[in-house]
Each structure stands twice: as C-alpha cells, then as structure tokens.
Image (tube, rainbow, N blue to C red; front, side, top):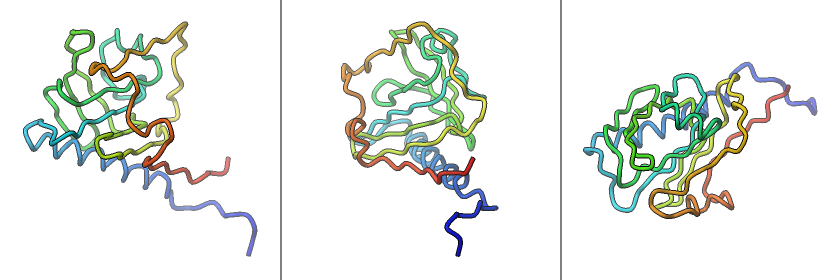
Length: 167
C-alpha cells in the first residue's frame, strides 16, 4: 500500500459541502413554512461572500463589506423566501430597509447560538477574491450584542470539512 493518498475521482468534498449547505436551506425553509417566525430563542448568524456570483445586496453594503458580511435573522426581518439555490430576505441596516438575495454557494458560516449549532463552509467559487478596501468597518449587532455568536471564538460546535485536496 502506498503512503500517498491517491486523488479521488469522486468529489467527496464538494458533495459534503453541498449537503451541508442544504441543511441551511432546510432550516430556512422550515422558518418560511412556519410564517417567518423563529421558534423560541433561535436566531441565525449567516456569513456570506458579498462579491460571490448571484449575491444581490445594496451597493452601499457591498462597499462597506467588500469581502464578507454577517447578517442576523432574529427579530426584525421580512419577506423570507427560500429557493433551491438560495434565499432572499428583507433586513434593516441603520434603519434603512434592504432586500438581500444570497445563494447558498456564497455562505461561509451558519450559526444558531441559541443551541450552540454552527456550520462552516469552504468558498465554492474560485473567483471570489475580495475587493480592495482602505479601512473596512463592521457594525455591531442591531441587538446591541457585539460579542458575536456564542462559541464563535473557540470554534466549539462548528462543523468544518476540509479534505485537504492535493494541489
């Protein structure tokens, strides 16, 4: 038996990433089917690549967040519409309403801090290099919680799949 692992002809890493992104779609679909109300203390932090193909966000947000952006679905969101390839949602940024359309392929992290659940994804699009920026600034949470998702610092309860592809 060889010490080198042979290259797989089956794209396992891609298949697993797509399956895990489908979990996000199913969870959001459950919320949509339930009338857009989150049950109990559940709320979601969804991080995505702002310049990924198919992402539609206002120009001002793309300028403020040229690489990644995290949205919070908790108390104030509307028009959640879940599709097979992504979702759209209405959110308010500094009291300005905005509609966002996010394909699942653009998502890099999904966290539900209420139950210490999280998924972390590899970027799936090769041309997702961040735009250059002088000083990117991130806002704190609209809820006044600037600490981010519970467990995010130590990576606990986050599933990260990396099959270590040979280059």
